[in-house]
Amino acid sequence: MKRREFIKKVTAATLATAVSPYLLKGAPLPQAGGGPHIVFVAFAGGVRQQESVLQRYLTDSQGLTGSAYEGNIMYNMLNGASPTDKIVYGTNPSSGLAGSQPIPQILSQSIQSQGTLFKEVEAAGVGHYSGLVSLMTGSKFVNQGLRQRPAMPTIFEYARKFMNLQATETWFIGNGIGNSTPLLNHSNHPNFGVNYGANFLSPSVTFGSEGDEHIQFAKSYHPDEELGKIYEMQEFLNNAYNLESRDFGGIENTIDEKHDIKKFIREMFMKKNAGAIAHPPINDNNDLRTIGYTCEVLKWFKPKITVVNLNDVDTGHGDFTGYLSNLHRADHGVGHLWNYIQTQIPEMAGNTYLIACPEHGRNLEPNSVLDANDWLAYDHSDLNSTRIFSMLAGPGVDANLTVGSEANPIGDISDCVLTMAEILGIKSQVQAEGLVSSDGLSFFDRI
Picture (cartoon, rainbow, N blue to C red):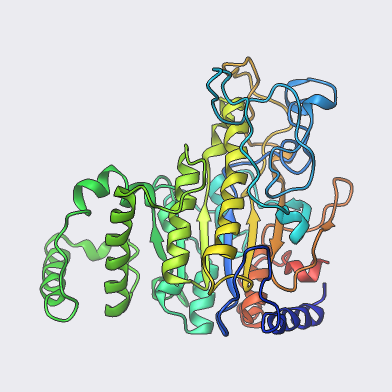
């Protein structure tokens, strides 16, 4: 779809909400002027093409032949029938056959059928960090080590600078604080940086055991009368311990935003203790619980841009069965997220775009590690690991369209940032900075 056609379709979709009570089954009307919003899923931690979009399940990985061992284990996101034999990726039924019951599909129509799938896209490299940096910046300049901020601006910085957004209108939801995850909410680029960064939240830490111990019952300070005392103490500690030389990624929220974040955190602890967090129906891994808190962030703040990082499939290095299980769960989480937006957040229903893309793939050949099922595992270091997919759904996006194939790859990992920039109306400003990859185009330019 060309940009002019995209704008026409978005306009038509917006006008249609004025006369149609529902955009999707059960989805309420969006509020006027609420969009566009973008939810970007950095989909898992190394997703092999063969088990995902190619739907080969055990045929290419474990040498099992026959149609029963092929099929789609991501049916909220992708079209296609499921495998029928050696099912290991589901839940644990009372029969004791671990994982033999697939998780029921959430969406009546897959995201592929609602939007556009780019089936063969080129990744920036074969490492988690290089891939995540490219997803966030649209740049493949990733010659930097772990625990360093991106050298090029993130989509958060572009959006906040060119759209004058507040910090609480942009969020990065991390699945933990290991490696470089907390550093992806802004770059160290001199023309952008922390002043345009997104708020970072790691639910597994904030609402995990550490949060239970240190945050849940912390004193609440009045924003007008008592915060000054806290800032004085912060300044003293910074000076006393030379903390200004360390990068804590301090995002500048306004006083009102800080107060709102405090109220949100307090509310989340109450909901957590009541078992009322908006988790997916199955929430037995960290990715799914992260998705649940992402739903809560969306409902509370209605951000313009929200990025959520998933990586539980990184068990693929040594546990192929666990990799399949977590891939199935990541799909379950994305299905729940998309359904929650459309049915539980009226201000975002019908004016939100969902983008999903892995940071890299996995190897064509296995390593020598066997799991409990005697199945071989896969690392990420060869050309097959540079093969990924992307998908886009939202108003004005062509439905049930597949672009590219194994024989005809179309797309680049850097396309995600330019696509978000186009949706937000800042594509020309982003390109004018000259900091995104020369290989990148928006998805709409690719079609």
